[in-house]
Every structure is written in C-alpha cells, then in structure tokens.
Image 1 (tube, one colour):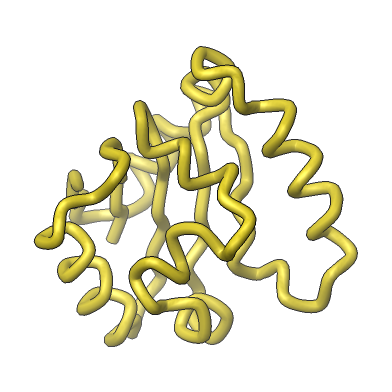
Image 2 (tube, rainbow, N blue to C red):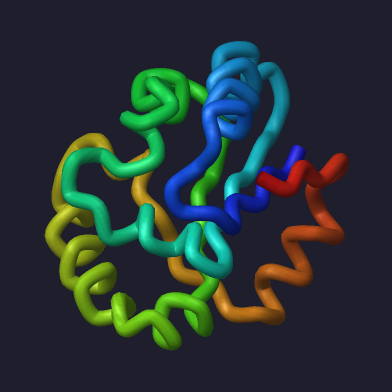
Length: 119
C-alpha cells in the first residue's frame, strides 16, 4: 500500500487512518511526502512517525518513507533535511528516516505499491 501525504498539518481523520494502517502493517508499505507534506521531513522530534504513534511499528515493518525532492526544494527545506539525514545516517534507528526521491522515482513507487491512499 502506498500512502501519499500532501497536507501539513494532517487532519485528525488522516492521522487515524495512518495509525490504523501502521498498527497492522502486515505487508510492504511506503509513505511519500509531497506538496506541503514535505514539511514533516524537517521535523527533529521524529516527525510524522511520532505524530501517528508509529515509530516502533515503522522500525519493525517493511515500511519505507520518502519525500519528493522537487517539493522540498520549492519550499526551501532540502538543505536542512539533507543535514538531518546525514546526522541520522550514523544512528542505529534510521529505518524510519525519510529518503528524498525524484519525480521519476515517485512515479515508479506508484507503479510498485497498490492501492494508493491520498491523505
């Protein structure tokens, strides 16, 4: 399943949807931050994983988190996210970190994961 998060902040319904999905993460899932959703990539407190209460579930599951590079660049946050990711790369729990992706890679993700849920 592919979750596409395009809002910041998320509505209560979107948060509840993500909480339920990651609580029962029984298959490969991916989460992509686009549009204003990329602001979650720059948060230093665990970001979206902490907001939905899924930090531990993300570490145990096969969930990958991505952020669209073009949207980060448009919002001027790509440098701060790159520095944060470089800092986290050495940590033991980087499985819930966010990987920047190009538009082409985003399209490939939409071909790989089904169904797609827009939040």
